[in-house]
Image (cartoon, helix red, strand yellow):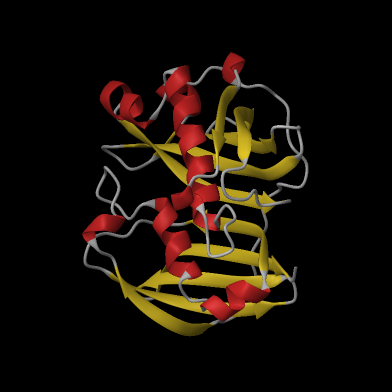
Length: 241
């Protein structure tokens, strides 16, 4: 099955360059996956109510080919591109109305048991093999981030508006936390080319999170820690326009 939706870049989806923002692109990807899983009857609400489980977004890799501008129309396509016994891989493609590739992404999902916290097999929460489209987009493989020490650059407190329906910090908020470490002058001089984020743990309202940064040849690696424990790792790649 392929989920498909036509849309356009609304004002609240734009950054200061009047282009689709990184956060908005991430939101499109997450919403498309949610809608796809809903159409398949295996979304997060069903997993909780029917199977006593919860889907976790484990990794997300987004590549920006060209960010569409304000009021530009686009089409979103989303499908399960692969799977293992315990993981699903979901690809999302954003194209212009003429078929030009704009953004592509891959999300890795896994389900955990609400009572034990252990990983569940995908077929125990409603997934069947015929739900997969079995076609992968190239260039969306997940990386192994280096373990090199990084420098702490910021500390934030998780607020109530950053929470999801499970009262965990919403996945997209970690992207916002990292983006906020760049100033507006940096954004004037750079275009995002890629974002890869690995979710390693959860955080909750009132907790303080330390953000560390390591500059690499091909981008910036960020780690978000709570009391020294790494809960998220995120890499941004940039290019000068």
